[in-house]
Structure formats: structure tokens, C-alpha cells
Length: 105
Image 1: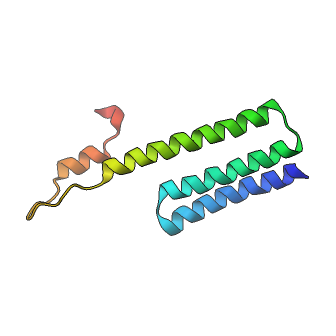
Image 2: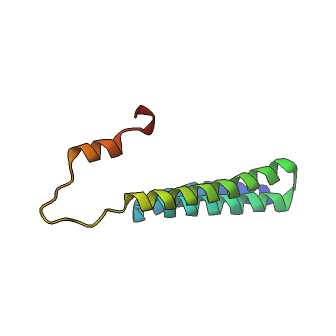
Image 3: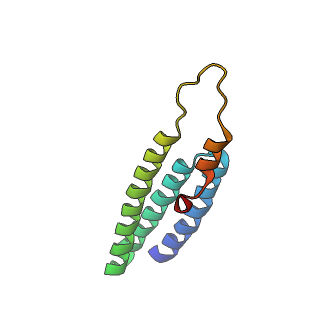
């Protein structure tokens, strides 16, 4: 009984994560909702038939949740604009640098 419920919760996690992103336009929040619901599905699956693969999957989701949250917090701090100077317009070079993939530098 817990396996179909866990599969349904996994599908709802994807829908809810996408809907959260579409409504709020906040990737960190949407990713948090998605990973929290996937963790709930993994724990529900463990309640039915605990095995090492299920435990490893739940642990991987927890680790991914923490890493993604930390990465998004660090990234959000780097995107905060500095104090605006009167008459200053952002240069096109700065925008190009932000949009260029890191591996091309």
C-alpha cells in the first residue's frame, strides 16, 4: 500500500515543484518544495519495505537538499546589486560575463 502512495507523492512532487516555480518565480523555493516532497515519498517507501537502496535514496535526497540550499543561498548573495550611483548604467560587458558559462572563461 505504501509503494503506490509513494509513487503518487513523487509525481505530485514534480507537479507541485513546477507549479511553485511558475507562480512564485523563485527557484530556491520551488526546489525546496520538490526535494521535501521527494524526501517524504522516500520515507513513505521506507515505511513499507525498508531496504538499503531505499535508505541510500533517502540519504541522497537529504544531502542534495542541503547542498542545493547552500548553493542557492551563496548564489543569491552574489546576485544582490550593490549601491546604485547616480547616472550609472550597468555595462553590457558585465551582463555578458554573467551570462557566459563558467567553463568558457
